[in-house]
Length: 276
Image (cartoon, rainbow, N blue to C red; front, side):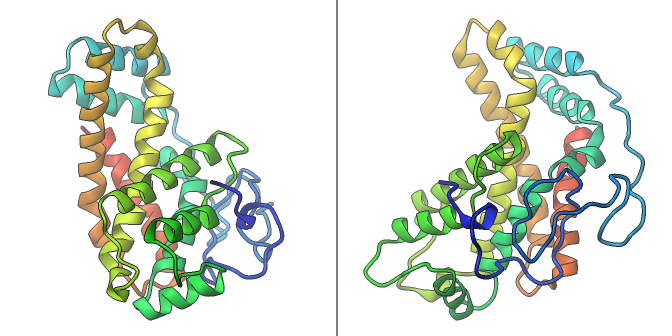
């Protein structure tokens, strides 16, 4: 996965809706040739020309966050699990900073939404124009190709996290048999919510485990305890994101509102994690 020319090679058309421009201040490759890299000062929001809110200094150190995770491994109570999740989010600088750092997953969510939103007939047409073939192919093959079309090449850590999260999301859909290519109605708003929500859930969880769970993994002499903690954390994150997605991800959102919706989806999710 991740060989998509959307993220590096020659491009022929845009999968992002016109006007969708996440605030990429970190110089990552633009999703499309038609969208140049943002060269504005880091403190300025390219969407409205106004300064971003000042970066908030973390109220919890990474040492504290990892210590909370280790404590939760040793004693997997609801309170310890919530504290570990909350301290991790605070170590990121809080929900505002966490959302700002998630530029690449926001960008990919925008592409995913743009490609798979609309009437079933419109979605199929967009996919065919993007080079996806349907005739004589299984759902698994088609969805793998869609994933491959969207997934960023894992050239850096954020790209790798997004790539992995997208692959897991499409695998979830395939395993659960949520799509039948013989039924156009399969391309529904519900499917769109599952894909966008799944992408963000896997991204948030994988990043949390990578950043705050490594110390716990090294110090843990009971792998089963660690796995059980990971499952518990995943349940919290899944519940938070699932509670927000239906209100923010809907068919027919215009590009400006889409940008705001995806940002709000991440921000509200991280805020609830911070306040656990």
